[in-house]
Every structure is written in C-alpha cells, then in structure tokens.
Length: 112
Image 1 (tube, rainbow, N blue to C red):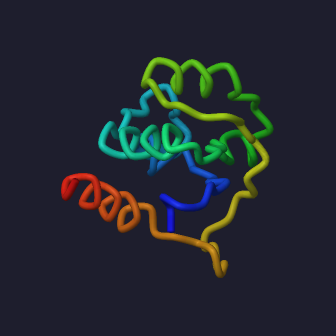
Image 2 (cartoon, rainbow, N blue to C red):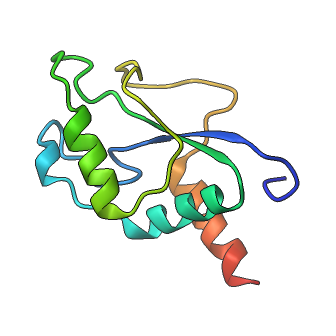
C-alpha cells in the first residue's frame, strides 16, 4: 500500500517524534527510531505534515521551538500544523497506533 500510492501523513510530535514531556517541551528527547521511519516515508514521496497541539490549551506559540527541534533532530517534513485539537482520546477510522505502525515499518525495511 505505502509503496504504490503517495499518502498525506499527519505525524504528532509529542510521543511520536519525541518524548512526551507534558508541557515542558524544551526537555523533549527525540525518538530517532521513529524519525528514521518518518524520514523514509518522506523520501518515498509521501507528504509529511507535523501536527501538534503544543500551545492549544495555553495559547502559547511554540512554533519557533518546534521548528528548531525538528531541524536539530533531522526530521523531514513538508508542512507544520499547530491546529491539532487537544483531546484525551481520538476515535477515527484512519487512526493508527504510532508504536505499532512504526514498528511495522522498521520490520518491513529490515527484510529488504
């Protein structure tokens, strides 16, 4: 599926690209295994949109920090969107568990 069609993929920052620091974003640690897979999807021609709710509750603009972190961590992306709603549970027919998805991608590329 991923190889034959080009997808628009929204990727969350906290808990996917970096550790979740519960609002202490300066302390976030990159999760390089996930970044490698996100970059691989980018390199395959998929559109990567970084989607975060940072500042969604506090109205603090974290754009500069977010973009600096993405650059420092080497994350490849096309667009950056700060308009992710804050929520506790997301129920969606297209929702994918990031841990399972990225593990599946790692296994797929190990087999090549």
